Amino acid sequence: MSSYLKELEKYRDIDEDEILRTLSPEELEQLDCELQEMDPENMLLPAGLRQRDQTKKSPTGPLDREALLQYLEQQALEVKERDDLVPFTGEKKGKPYIQPKREIPAEEQITLEPELEEALAHATDAEMCDIAAILGMYTLMSNKQYYDALCSGEICNTEGISSVVQPDKYKPVPDEPPNPTNIEEILKSVRSNDKELQEVNLNNIQDIPIPMLTELCEAMKTNTHVRSFSLVATRSGDPIANAVADMLRENRSLQSLNIESNFISSTGLMAVLKAVRENATLTELRVDNQRQWPGDAVEMEMATVLEQCPSIVRFGYHFTQQGPRARAAQAMTRNNELRRQQKKR
Image (tube, rainbow, N blue to C red):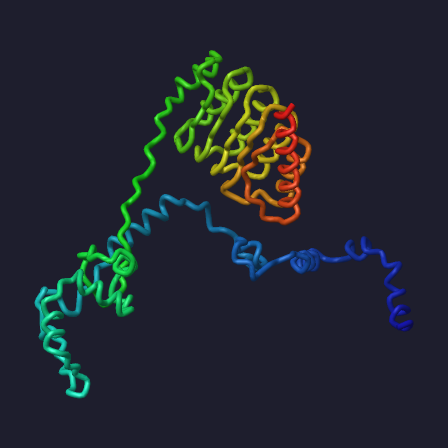
């Protein structure tokens, strides 16, 4: 080991700048290629970052994309289509397959008493369902038929019997009707501080212009009657999140804020959380189901906000990390207990 250390001692006082000054341009270029960090296995990176540029050929001229597309389109039109080897005429050839009837061997045939043969021959489908249920042949009917035959004691199923289990038929659930809220009227009411307007619900309206949402948040700064503000599934991004954060810093009447199912990134969520610290009236905050996961830092900030803001008693977010989840649960329990004690007083 000592000999190895002595061997390294001679490289201690080497002047790297002097060595670089003595290198030729070709050697410097080769050194630059060797020092480049490449990741050939990462298919998400462009080709220039997965392998070194080994082409020395200069470009022949500027790229004309429109001319290239026109050339490719013209070339595709000039190529003659290939003719089918056998033209399709629609004629059917051969005979259709008919499954032969299987004759039951004599040893497998079951002979019943004449009374039973006559009863089964004249039994209806509903009666056959009840008989199959009593004998435990549940694979011949649906679950609803089977349990109705066992529990009701009456013949109430006329759907018939089948060789496979049939799924229960459910009534289709219609989609929710579109949100009928008139955004322009809501904006006027918020600006005029209408005392009858206590809830602003713009959920599922996906074509609201960003300037109009920004104006609505600006008008909410001075509004004193709106208690609930909901922007669920409105395709809102970070600009709207920043406008909401500015609104929370000045508004002192809002109690519920819901911005779930939007395109807000970690930056926008962090701005909203920092503004919540300056708001003492907000009791409910919902920020879950954004387009991307906000990250560990945002989840830790959420837990810190819940610990420092005792006014929040309802919080909508699904934590992915155990640490922030436990802290948030403990903070919510404490906040609700403080609210309960205040109501007693």
